[in-house]
Image (cartoon, rainbow, N blue to C red):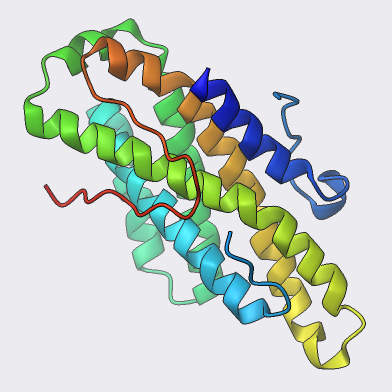
Length: 217
């Protein structure tokens, strides 16, 4: 029940303001914060926090549940990112890598072997799995909460010539956050039953204002 409520709140946050398609967001499934209102820089800073949290936690889960071959491919992609000097291109490649990792995590959870393997993880690995899932869900919830804020903020500053330079950055941030919200929602649907069956203590954030769980175990 808590899972359905959590996902419903995330998706409602993503759909509050108008059509997602108008913002170039992916099609949003019909499953049923602190404000940065008026301050584009504050909003973009919060967006970066959400992205960083999702990137780190997705990477940790990816390393826990995927094959060595998939991890090797991801390492090659990461090398390309590290070798890229253009900041915008680096951000775009990082988002693509996180998206592919999230897809791989969702795919891995469909394999019954994962549950059997997770049951044999030691206590430290199970603790890392639980913390990473919590942080991924938190980052996804932050993203979902920020989407309508960003849409509203971009709409409000288009009439201000001094702020027009920020509109494109807001547009790109909202598009990225929408993708994060949807991608993390898929994982949050798939992983908890597998982890619970493996005796991993699954907890999800009830608010985007919660503090990330330490994963430096």
